[in-house]
Image (cartoon, rainbow, N blue to C red; front, top):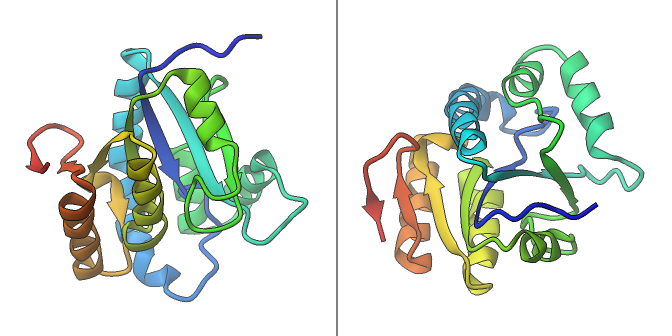
Length: 186
């Protein structure tokens, strides 16, 4: 079966997340806000015919798969369940598990994006100052146009998020703006 083309692609980084790490309690409220905004953006991308790819940490579980992780998060209590409910994948969404911080490192993401004919990436997710930043950097060096919808990202503090988004805008020439419009950065 041939993969459809999609010049624009929405990447959801680490939203399907058991939220079991130091700092999760600080990240959780902002993560839920970001997931709510991302769900609306995802619906818009879907209406416009663009692809969505979940790029998720494997949390060191080398026998894991995305659907098992999703099931575990749906069964959990608290923010993990809320995130999974807000951003449950549709049947035609794509999934990539990553072993480290960047969605590109040691994953098939680059090949998948090439097959889709992607040129522009909207990078959303957790956390803006780590995995989103690393994924955006790797997208930039591969020649993709990068947009980071600021309301679709979260970090453990607003200051860490703002610092990361400022760095992404300045260094990667990425567009930083709300998912609903407006413009900040390049």
